[in-house]
Image 1 (cartoon, rainbow, N blue to C red):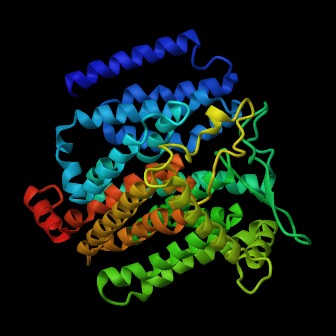
Image 2: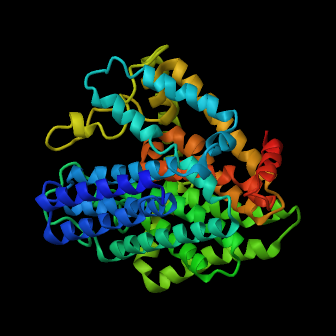
Image 3: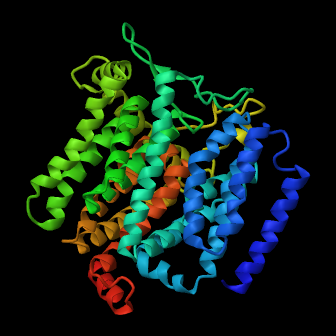
Amino acid sequence: MNRVVLITGLVLASAAAGVVATGSVISGLPVALALAVAGFLALVPVAFGRWIALTALLLGWLMLEDLFRKLAGNDVRLYFVKDAIFALVLISMVSDNGLRGKWRAATGSSRLWLYALIGWGVTRSFPPSSDFRTPLIGLRLDFLYVPLVIAGYAIASDRERLKRWWRGIAVLGAATGLVGVIQASIGPGFLAPSRDAPGLPFLNLVRGLPGQAEVFRPSGTFVDPGRFLAAMIVCLAIGLAAVIVRRRDRRATAAVAVMAAAVWVSGGRTGMLVATGLICVAAVAPSWAARRTSFVGIVRIVAIAAVALVTLPVVAPDLYTSRLAWYRDTLDPRSGRNEWSFRWTNYSSDTVRGIGIGGPVGNGTGTESLGRQYVYGGSERSTTGLNKVEGGWAAIAVEWGWVGLFLWVGWTISWLGRLRRCVRAARPSPFAAGGAVLLAIVFFDLVVGFFGGLQGFQNYIENAYFWLISGMILGLPALASGRASDAEGVGEALAVVE
């Protein structure tokens, strides 16, 4: 191990041990919770210097952090644990000479748009609108996890390693989804905090229509149902990719079925539509990648989803029927209770209004970002009145003005274009089919879902996976060529992309 990395790891481990010993970090937490957090952090020195292990540790923590936080009464100290782990990931990546040049090779000319966008975001951070923390929140939520592009690109340099990662993330998502399914069946008391949790109003979120059964939206290990659903969607996309490249992998197949069931019981209509779209893409992607019709691939993907939806009404009929009525009456365009027209009108009008509010240069970075309730929300950490508009492009226009909106759209087009070329360059490999599914979720994050709000992109789980998945897609051309670790092979693959 690199001597600098080893020394840094020992110093950080010693400092962490001292802090924990004095109780300055975990004081006030429930004893069992404090032990769980300390036990998880004890893994960090073991993994230090191994950026792959630390990245896996980070993804695992992202699934558990909210659970620890809500059980501790929304103790925001726990929110920064992932930042400490990510800092160690960065240190380990910087010390790995094998990662040098990966960023430039992966991103190509599309990185110039990203540089311009980040530069404008930093420029509009001065002077701060009212509190110096506001621009820091905005920049953090948008761009903190950009280096995970390098991690994803490096992971994709080895076929078997990429397969293991896709399957591992699928299993992690399935375990998290199973918790949500259990909570939906038992009720909101499962994994509920035993103390007051100000700022977490959605732990017991119930939806439904008059005359129908109530639909409790589970949060699982997270602090709100939206974050649970976002985690399920992104892990479902990766799970579908794993099933495509590992046709006989029972664990990946079972994981996809569990996550499909979790999306169903979540009660999230957007998530239900996205999951359906991902399954459709996964069904046809193998045929597209192989340049010939693959009926076996279509049947396999559809069968997995069907098994989940057939098993659920047998095991938990109430969870099935209540959601079926909810989805049918609110998503069917023929129903008088659907919100299609309302949503379109609201988001489009707010986009126009946001352009007017922001003007040429905007109101400043972070002024429409998530997390500001911890600065301006008082003791209850309320979000009431903090946002002027609803919509992703609307929020960008308010924060960064016409200039920022132009840069964001330019980066989006450039980024998606490069990812699309990478997926096409991986044909006829099955990894191209898996990449097509991942490209679909990235497209949703930047276009379809972004139209409805900034919260999806700034959700730290969705954001971390967004950059990691992007890196994996960018590494597919060299991987498919069978020469991912060969400099000449990488050069040829990137020449095709460019």
